[in-house]
Image 1 (cartoon, rainbow, N blue to C red):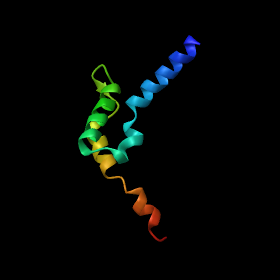
Image 2: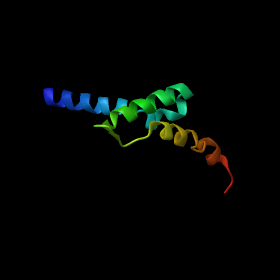
Image 3: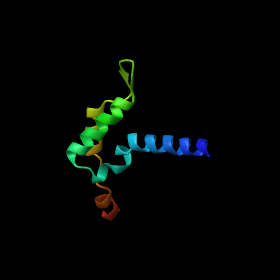
Image 4: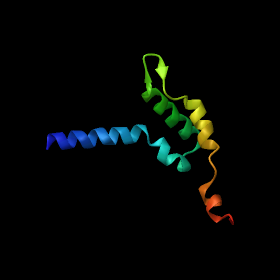
Length: 74
């Protein structure tokens, strides 16, 4: 039982670190920047990062609005 609790706890931690990738439509600009920075910090190791948090913010801001795309005629 302890092993299962530990796995769910680990999964919850991972979900919290990467939440920006699923919650970005509902975030304010400041929240988006903060969560991208947190993700960048998570993916940083020994002076190297797999993610440029400022670039991620810009990429997310440039996503098309899915609601607009959904209602556009083909």
